[in-house]
Length: 391
Image (cartoon, rainbow, N blue to C red; front, side, top):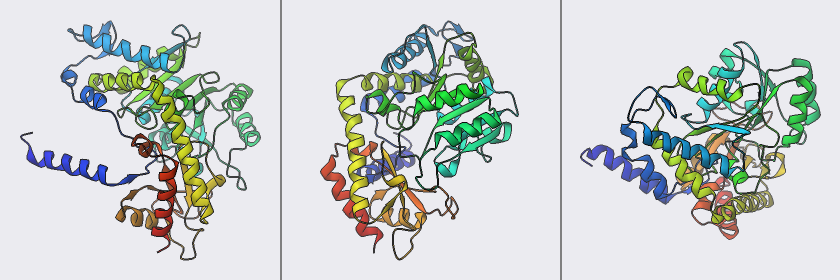
């Protein structure tokens, strides 16, 4: 590379990544094939529009790449082409969610989503997000005692508020979600049911977590977490008389974006193909085994886990109430980073502290499982975490 400054920074980041224990729940490591597609000459091509409906010429190969990515996305999640459509042009998870609302909910309409403090995402209608500025969020949370979803309470809120769309999904919720109960809740108030499966997409693809597809109208996901692909987003929608897929396509383009990033779409296609291999199923199951082991070991050492444990790839530790020296999430994250363990600070349900310096930290096992870590390694990592945080 002629630009030595950038080359050196890339090498420095590569060295950093290799030298740390990465417990960031939203990160993973892609294959060389994914990187090759992402850094390919496809970045040179502009293909505004959709397959066979482009505004540029010379797009025959562009069509083939996008079509292949769509076919693989449907195949991976065992969806019939006659029943489901998938948009593969969204640049990431937040733009994907925004496109759904733009296409399906009138300005000022109601989005019912999990509150940020309970484990929801900013794009589930939080006030600091554009999704909370254009639309009204009807928040739901977790039970104060169990720190898990109370579906009866959620149903009462939905029946009272009659939201246009209900978002089931999370960014920091360590338990399985009962998709069937959310379907029942959506039907009780006439709402569209959207599932944001960004965190558990790879687990669902690998058969290690229940799939939301039998119950949802819309499913959005990032591709760079447990699915182990590049940073991108997918939007699945049922094909029926509501024309959800057509409205969403128009919201993505021309509503929000111009030409698609073909290099990104090709890299997603590679990752989707990799996720269909038998070894990916083994990987997905190991991610959960590792998370449960890590959670169990930390719990044994006296750390309070939100909801008492985990069913997926992530866990939340209430560090503020787990030690006598009252460390905060920010302090914990900084201490761990100095010792080569990367996490993120995170609010916990009913947190009395701010998101800038919350009571908790979030840990995930997807990235280290990609590196080959097993249960015995999680035991050692738990010991290190305990020792570092109790200094």
